[in-house]
Length: 150
Image 1 (cartoon, rainbow, N blue to C red):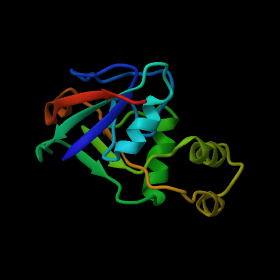
Image 2: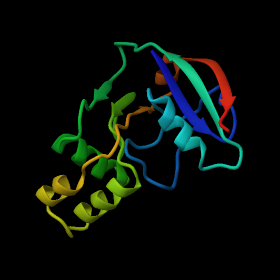
Image 3: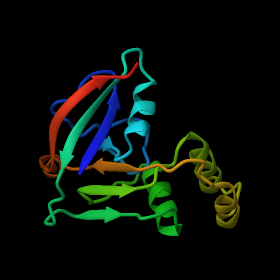
């Protein structure tokens, strides 16, 4: 499977990134199967680069996959966004973009109920993210090429 990462430079040798900002699936190296989404990620920077990789799943790794947004997905994101760690090597699923994260934040703060969250959380376009959360998971991806987004 071919996957993509949007950044300000080519990422030939990915690293697990720990950030002070809590992300959907926690610390890791984030990619997507959607090329246009990686290009949107890259457009946050002055220099806009998308790197692509060949991804082959290692069944020996601990993998969590969310096929769709559901209560388990919401609870997992709420946990990761609250700074809690997990033990998965790879987490795959829909992305809580900025608008959706505002609803996640409101849910975490108790400002909206779970039902209100789902009523608001309608994606206008599909999203996907693959978070490589452990050093072992990085062995599943091999750099192919990179290009600059115009």
